[in-house]
Length: 215
Image 1 (cartoon, rainbow, N blue to C red):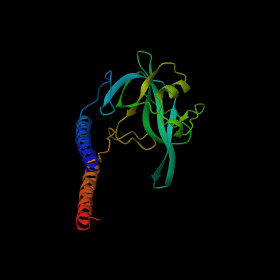
Image 2: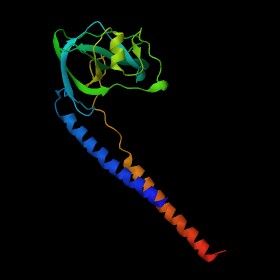
Image 3: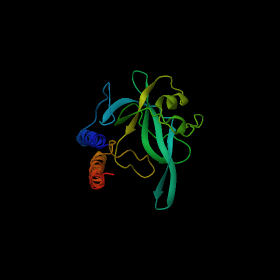
Image 4: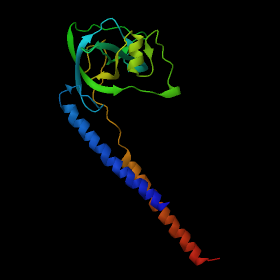
């Protein structure tokens, strides 16, 4: 048991340093300008894509309640499509908006550049709430299914999450920063090492008792 607990503690120390490195990379990427979308993007870098907005299509992802001075507001993440030169439609998460029915917002005509970070398709399995493709309300961020509900046959296998400052009142509220994975491995390591010490102390008491009373 002592060896197992020490091994778990060492494993968490390695994870602690690994996550710390990722967090430092994210902090550095947050300060850099977006880069053109690479072939293998990660969710920890800012990227930019170009295309033309399809201005009459929109969908909702999720169901989120937000507090306001006037009380609770119901809303969701607004998804709109951006058509790229290769014909693929990219589902773009513009941010949280108030409402129960997805409605497109005014978008620029012509070629536009949009920046943010890439989110791969999510699969919550049987525990996900049932989406309503007819009403274009989804509870799983699956860009292919969302795009198909909008009538697109060729959809990029990722969603672009827009980054930006808080917009003018009434507009979508985009993500404020790149996603940052939590790093709790340090306290987990201390927990495993602490339990290993407890095992040693318990063994010492047990051994002393047996030595005093061998029978």
